[in-house]
Length: 173
Image (cartoon, rainbow, N blue to C red):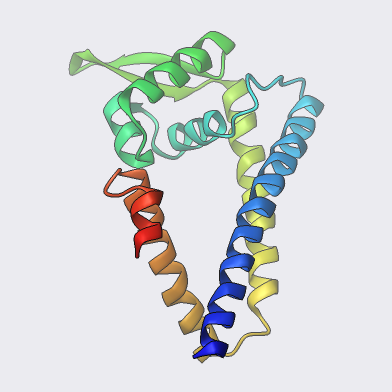
């Protein structure tokens, strides 16, 4: 029993360390992305990668309306409204209306937004290749266990983000 509790404690410490390292990695990754964008004379609007992900979503599904972005990204309407207004102002996206629906506004990328979109895709492709290289050393059984753990972890994170319970509820478990 002692070993199991010690091992669980170690896993928790590793989990917390991973969260902290992920924060640092995300910050470094976005700074690197901003440097790459500057090579194309593109100044990013904020220190928030979410705006780049909105550009990515629009690029993947254009023309796409506000509701479509909300559904695809799982963000609030207010967040998408704020981000899209900033992206419009900065010239990354443009608004349009489809001929058969004059009420609905659709978003698509400008040339400037398309540069960001392609740069983001390239960086994700590099990240994906590094990920596949990293997991290459694991057996199929290990990958299945890791896959189950990751699925459970993502489900738990989604429950947090949807407000189904709080961190304090989790501490009681």
